[in-house]
Length: 170
Image (cartoon, rainbow, N blue to C red; front, side):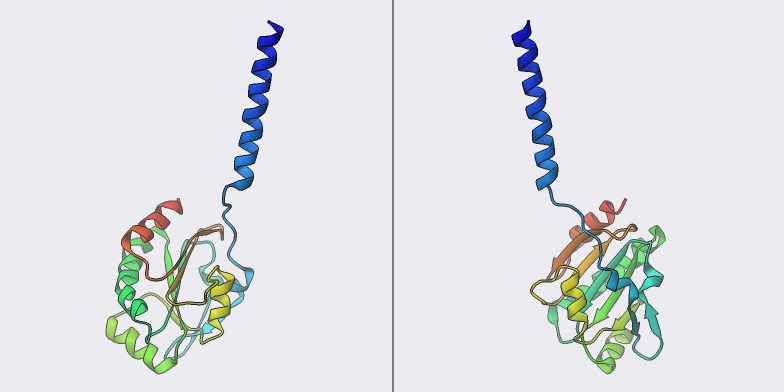
């Protein structure tokens, strides 16, 4: 009987250690950098957008440029995501690493209704802070209501990725 209790206790200890080990090695959702929420960026055509006004809602941040072919291709998909998910609280913001005139013309020509701001080349620093180690475009990060990162993508997103991020936001 003592041997059986010893075996059960040892198995329990191993299971607990395994659980703690798994919890230690599993990826953790890190938070969006606080610098994101302090930015106030210019909109093409005038005005600014304080990113703090988007805090507390699920947010898709997309870094793009008019000269970036994959960026241009994914913009209608981002617009559809915005239109279909904004009733659930989702916000989308496009941060252009570009000049005002081509961005304004593109946004108007494509009928983009989600907020687009001008980040210039300094926006690449923010994209790196969000996890874009390569500094490439397009780059997207999905941020949950609590400010944690739901997902990141260097390269164009697709419907599946956006669906997964939206479902992960709860």
